[in-house]
Image 1: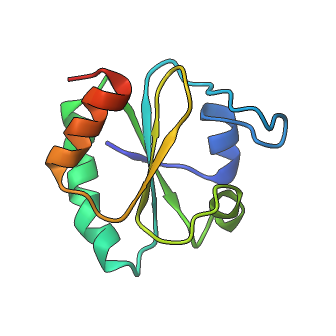
Image 2 (image 1 turned 90 degrees about the horizontal axis):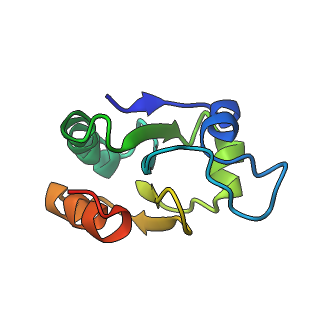
Length: 118
C-alpha cells in the first residue's frame, strides 16, 4: 500500500533537501512518489493504479503519496505546478518527474527503464 508522507517523513525516508542541494537518496529500493490533491480528478484516477502497483511490486519498489495541499513546502521544493506529478527515484542516479495521469502500462514501462525492475 502506498504510504502518505509528510515533508518531515520525506526528509527522513527519501531526501533531506535542507541538508544538501546534491541529490542523495536515502532509500534502499527504488521509490515512486505521487504528488496529488484530493480535489484533483486525474489524481483520483491514478490513485487506484498506484495502489495496485504498490501491491504487485511490494518489496521491490516503495510507493509514497504526498498531498500537495497539506505539504506545500515539499511541493514547492520540487516545483510541482501540475498534478498528479509522479517522481520516479532509482536507488542510484537522478530522479525523473512525470506530470499527468498515466496508465498502468506506462508505470510498468518506467519501472523497467528507470529502475530495471519487472
